[in-house]
Image 1 (tube, rainbow, N blue to C red):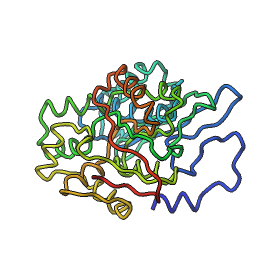
Image 2: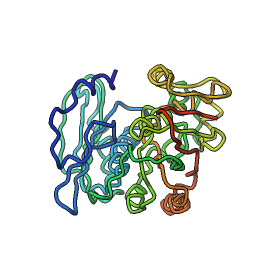
Image 3: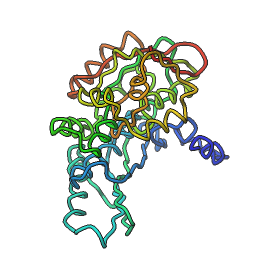
Image 4: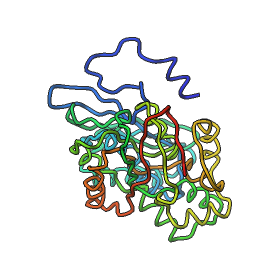
Length: 322
């Protein structure tokens, strides 16, 4: 549905300085200011996925800023998007949500310089993220080349952990692992922008690994293959999906793009590659000779589970999981 709506609303005239718009479902818009600077602009917000208000604010802020990093940019400031049911939530809860977002922006070295708030029926929170990148260093989701290796920066399983949390089955250690990854900023994106062999970057979020990799395939007019056994997966998430726990969004993702994916093996493979990731990892397509440099960049930033998971190949846009 989203693809159809975007296709129908495509811009009729595109300014020359709009380097990235909606044409390939990329992570953020990019507008060239001059020969040395382009502005990266994105927005993201959602309803709570955890009960702790401060944790909710932290997750939402990290998720929003991820799109700036995915374009190779460095955030410069943010605006808050706030919708709260004022007759239901105490002021202290609202303050904690905002404080959580502010703490993540402080980690990113940026201020929340303004925003907008409304009274709504259910809490929503997120950010408009603004960043800067050199116009020739923008990393799109449409530049992959045949033979590129695929590297994933964070382990999969956030959606599954969220589903286990709602069922009261998530352990304290599992919650800590969920918070560890959902609030970890994808700062490596700015370093990836400086590596010539990095051809395409996106972040894995609501459409799952398969959905966002398919966006790279479509934008680059290439096929992709992923080796399931190479995928980094959060250990507790793997246990829960083996017990049959998954999200409704995973099933909707499969309905939306499953015809473009071939998966060998058991059903849990489908559940993992379609699992929606909140504040998920960067997905990189790079020349084989640059893979070591990419993995080293991830390691420097504390992404020790980053792994090479597959490769791009000539062919019609399609994903095969083996």
